[in-house]
Image 1 (spheres, rainbow over the protein chains, first blue to last red):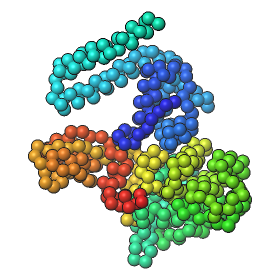
Image 2: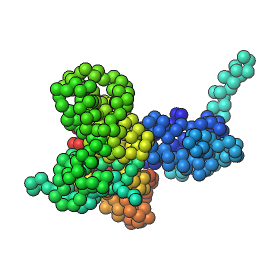
Image 3: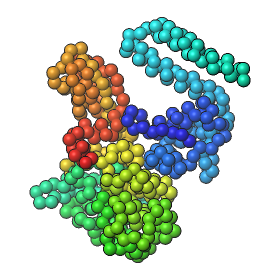
Image 4: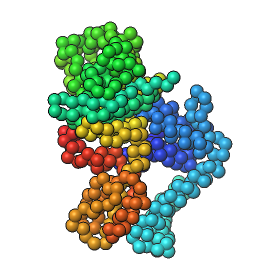
Length: 139
Length: 301
């Protein structure tokens, strides 16, 4: 499992692990029913104290994202995975929008200014992406 | 009965005029990793030597597994693994001789585990200790420290002067010690990023006193790093309530602070400023704010 930890930005390590696993579940990089690494394995991989992994997995279980089977590992929840994933996807986008709005406020952009920039960039990216799309269609 | 693995209470120690430890208390419970941080000469090694029974408590008490390590060295040391920065190993011994020698003192020695580790580290058992590189010495010392599967593993600046590969071997040994059967690790380090990742609990020692201690999370929760902007340029650092260190110049300053965030904001506002951004401070920022940058960089050399 590809998780990156940084201690530079002040986010607690267990929270970085929780956020990245939530993201992987929401984006289906981790499928419902898939096993996630044992505590010891992930601790060795990330070079963090095993108790941090325990804490992250506990929080993921409380949130209903993973389920522990006694003595048999930890798995991505089967039930409720899809409504959870859609809620989670919305949560991730909302976090990005919140950060964007905060930044816009700092730089004196109104919400309408931001929307204008959003549409213009979307159009520009569309133009760049289109030739590739049409080539793929031809194949 | 829940008994602490280590229980140090009110420990003080002088070397001549110099106060090495001043009323230090330190408690460690099973299944957790304890990080000791502090500048050179702050008292970390002196504390560790008391745990090993190498120094006798002049005032205060030291208990390891409920025993006094000076009065009952056998009862304590057979359950302890120890690796020091100096890695004091007998120079004339071959690695395999050193393993047998160490095994003799530890009834719980696991030869299979020792062999696995020696193979993993690619250590030639016929080599003498004096022929080993710094990294190989550290690896050899590590095998000798963990192969009896100690209930308490103590490492004094284990990473100092080692390359990334050997540092990783040491971190792996720490993680396995705790993950496999809930044993306990105490390690001192000046690599604060390593301490932040690896510790459940941190004790910061400064001038022989415990300057700060708690879970990594509680320490970080209690300390913020904020960017502050003022309407006018300031010629000297503003004196803000709760600030531990203030760096910057002109209109922009970055402040590491603890205590009430509300009070901090009010204090900034009273001085004609605004808090632009706040986040939890990292252990390194907290250490530098409390102990001073000069001390840390001297330590890192």
